Length: 188
Image (cartoon, rainbow, N blue to C red; front, side, top):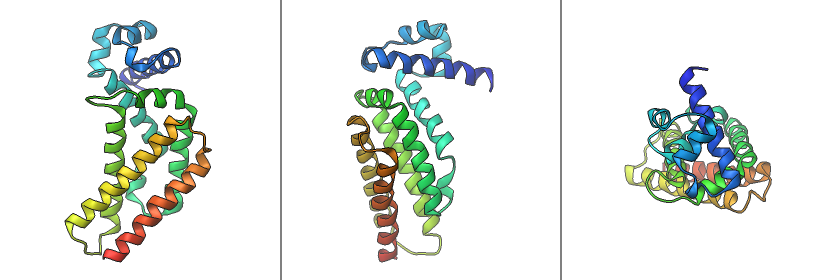
């Protein structure tokens, strides 16, 4: 791990620990750097703001769980990767539930949607390599499934992840991936 990664990890650990004690909306950069043992300059060298740090935490969780699965169409690989991601989110649900309460520029919700949108875009592009569907239809499905996935995951986290991650994964992939492929086949 590089020095940059180590610093980011310490800052991430600090904000996650602080989120156990109080709402993230009240946690300041000063609180984070004090808890991590760094300066504000160090924080701003690595992150634009607190939201950037929160989004980085999710990004590293996604990368460790999902990686580049959107370059493969095997639904069993997708299910395994999504389950791993949901288990990571479930383990840190206090943090993500807290992060979803924050709104505004660079919000976690917006970042969650953006990453989901990018994954669905990649999957659809890969799936449609030899099929022909008009751009408006493709964009509709990317948006539809990205919003569905983001909203359901958000509701799951906001409810305290009451449905076990494995059951939620099954419901989510059944509704999104299977529905997506069925719809793409219908329109191609």
